[in-house]
Image (cartoon, rainbow, N blue to C red; front, top):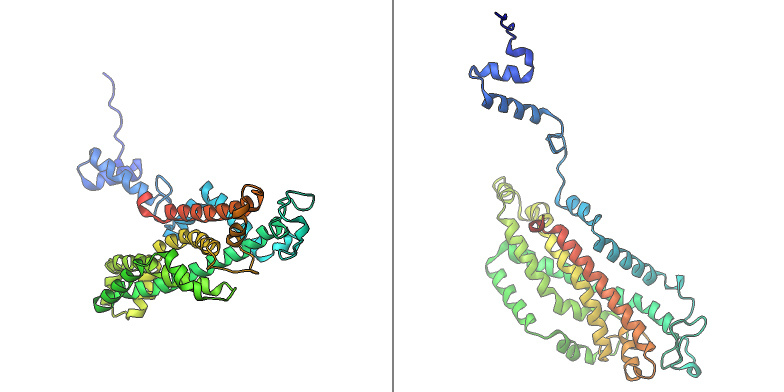
Length: 334
């Protein structure tokens, strides 16, 4: 008859044995409880996401996704190149965009002039490079103005509500009813200045209602969160709740819409300049060059294709960047 195996106390099995012994019941449920406790005590947990690992915020999570998004990388490189040549166009264009020779009008590509000449004998390559400065400046400044004004008005309306919210809603309805191009034709037709500021002011004037409604909705959503109610219960002032608790959590949709709208404002400036009410000579602009080249599209298509191509690439880059930022900041896509 075989001898029975010697009994070993449950404590000899370590954490699992002590967990089972402490319940007095034993069984699979006690062992599962012990395993769960062991995993909780393990740094990083089963997937490296335990309590010892710091949780990422929305912004760090978004940046983590953006760095792995090829759309963001490609559009970011294109925009970086445009910003560099906007600040230092002489890096890739040594000529003067206003230096013209009528004897070379509408001529094609030549050594040192790869894009040919326009109807006034100006180098198309140089004007295309210098035109980036005007278009990018108008787009960036108009977007900043629209985002700041719309965020302030919409945020205050969403936070305080009441009569201020109703008044702002009716004002935005009025601005939404104004066609942008028609409004530009009416308002800018009386402006004789060749600077970029009248065009930027017009874009801010008609562009803030869209950002305002986005900001208003984001603030209303953030205002209902528990941490805002807790701050209110602890006696936090309205300014503190807006700046410390609501704004950081409501600004993401505004950034997404503003990034996409930047490309729209660049194309709007070109459209207004093409119609003759936007920027005016001697300002160098893609819209002005497209307008002056359109009558000669059959005889000298190079005059139109290069500035139009630069405009299309720029607008597409900003729209792609906005789409990538939207995908990274939208929690529904995670």
